Image (cartoon, rainbow, N blue to C red; front, side, top):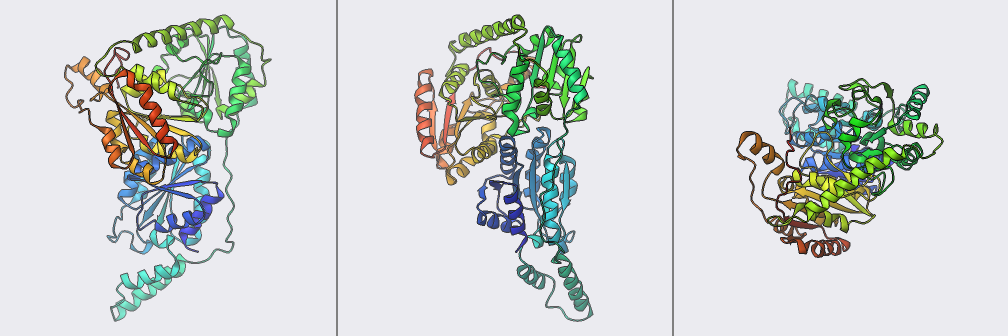
Length: 575
């Protein structure tokens, strides 16, 4: 058994169904042995996409996503995606190839201090130096990725740990001056022999069990205190965040608990889709106004960061109940009145057990519902406005009509994607993926691949801005080769519009924000996919129907939609 087989055995033990990678000689044994064990190997065109895919896979399954990248630039190319996963609190295992242990620091190909480069951006990092340490190190990595506040971890796997002993011995003999003679040669040979013996030394017990990981339950007394505050509330509001979705198996229980509580709820990030559109508790618009009027605000896995104006969005007189796995996020910018350190889903489940389930706050809920209806009517009116090319709101409404219960939404972009977030609604829980707090452009291709691997029975809709599309459009090659039927829709307005809006307003110049209305559908065709185009509003439903037909037979599709601009997001500034 070589080290690659050890890695594959651990992945199989943890029910990892897909390995995302970009090939390299350092990591080849991992790929071959993973395939041998029935793990799907999805090879991408950029290491960042491999890590993004692992992130998405973890968010949708609750199982740490795994990406394997080659040494040096393979590892550094993945770092932006790793940091995105860190800030999104997504459990991910990054396996990085490395130079042979005996050659570290001696000028080997792609040899850098990878731990120094990666460690600041991950929860935990280790370099394996002996074959016997590989399996226990991987088990510790999987536990660390899920423990407490989840996040990415890094395991450096040197090439001589991954290949078989015979191949490594041959490599050492050929590469370590075997043709030399004399004392220096004998000393070198002894050192090599000692190093090889240590490298392949067997462990006393070859079996390694999966390490447990810890999810902190909320303190029962704090749950009781929160229940008392809510019972006395007159205008409560709940904000549900991605962290409440980390226990994938508990999503239904979270929804049931919120229904028993009866609090009007705004969902963000991965929590979108917990309630279907039209649910009596779901509120989608005018969140800021509701938070300023509320007397009790429940933050379930949501920090008071820029998305809530650093706490300024919440009524200063309101009683704030916050529950979070992360102690820093729990206290960020404003100390809550009831601070619960623990898992938000467990907290909500136990909080739901303390209520009688009777409908309450009906007048308050109706007031917020009327605001939702008024905003929806305004959006419908704006969608009917004439613009150059296609009205982006009308396009988003068409996409929403085309979705079904199998749909998984991936959002990657600025202005167009921000518009879509108001109009396009996920149909079920755990079917909405955006970058998260890091706001990373370029997640699209990788997220789509990871989502498709996690949900092979679903259909991924990838909504691109024309700026962000260029980051990962090459993954259409990957989708074609692996028969992954993604439908990508590019909102093409020929600009980095989200930046241009504020830049023009504040500085009077759009320099650096202007693009061409590129024929992205032809790019997708060049990679072997299906390219479609929308130039007029009356083409929306027909073209999207064609896209669904092509996807149904396993073909990835890119719809290049030429859109105009509306006043919908005037005043929005990305700072």
